[in-house]
Length: 354
Image (cartoon, rainbow, N blue to C red; front, side, top):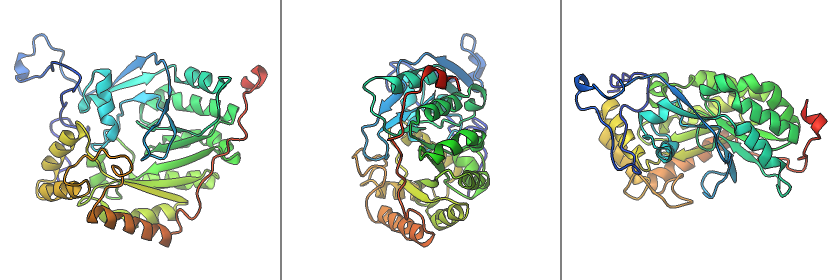
């Protein structure tokens, strides 16, 4: 049995706010009728402007295939219940639960910081990944246009950029992306977890449909933008059977590359996902939970670098082999994209105007 309703918090992935591990106390509402001094709870998204000190982060993990990341937004309105980035919201004093989806921190000075970073005298050009943490094309981007400004700067400097997103809003920036593609400066991955629309609505409540994401792959490909699919995360007992269909659909749409990860429930995500799983899929929740544990040595959270994202054990190995098999069948990953770092240049003041 699957229930796609969320009466506790309609339209959100999480139904609760988990405690912040860095906070000594937590405000809770035990009795809604007694909220005299607390601000009334709201389901509306809040955009909180932040004056960031730095914007480009060095990535030390060997699991994610990027050396540097850039995230113009913290928190993500897409509300994916499995999102590994949820825990980072606790560093800002918020919860990894509803707060992560509802309180979106907007780093309004991100374009200035980015330009400053790549203009430094000692800067050595390396690919920088947008959305290493949260989606750079989440709904806030439609209003603030920070990602578009970042891409404009990247094009002016010939700075290589990798992008991963699940939002069709990326097509707004096809003019910039197609120019970057001509210089081998950009590669895009579109994340698709399921072709089942009812499952997509539960897993990722404020994202575009899988059909729209496939159209996005097609549109990018037609404009010469190298594009791949991330079938991530694979959740055994929920979506692993879709791997062949996801990869075929992506290849038919023009994708050249494909990657995957096994779901990993670290920190507060363990509690959020478990609440969601037993509420939405009560008939198979125990089985799914144990399958996830089987991929991480008996726990749902494996912290071992090099293993934590791909999983371990027979179930994870079966998923890996299946993914490899169908990538080969549909001619995905036949080549590996190489970013062009040799074209980087700091534009003159006059060039920067254009």
